[in-house]
Image (tube, rainbow, N blue to C red; front, side, top):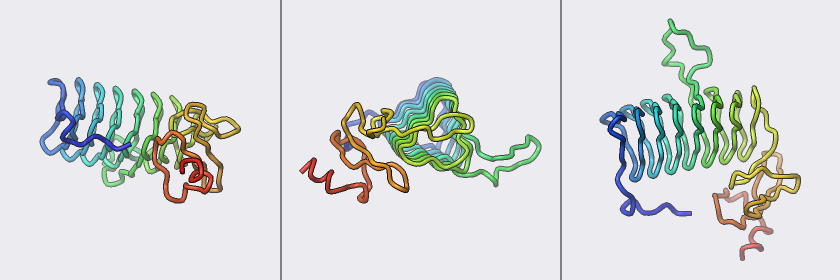
Length: 217
């Protein structure tokens, strides 16, 4: 679904108690709520919601239509692609072996969260890993390795316990989304959608199939 033109959106807004430093970029329609801090050099896309007591550091990139819930800190090296949901108090780390008395700012590791991903409340994302598009990280999970697209992750450390659809529904053995009817198939590199009845989300060119073409043509 195409985003509305920027001219149709209201300007970015920040609550009076929030601090948005000069040099931070907020896209049209983005809202920053109470007691949050957006550092200079951070870039936040359009139509985002930044909840209460959120800290967004320099160099952080947040895509369009993201929701960052209360008490989340995004450090340098974190990139959220479009449509990412960060649940309340989820945690991103920036170094793997921190010490209060040792400066390790040069050792920050990047963390990229793919489009449409959901991170549950109080989950921890250990730095240096990529979260695949549309994955779902359960509340309280601790992610210690890369996550494939559409994976359902839970536990400490997090393990894949299933798959989810683009609409966020847990898929059964038939790999059909109960909300949209979209159909998926397991392949050696993970899960791929083969029939998109909803029109929601994006598929890479290699995700298309004759079956999908026939269903929409």
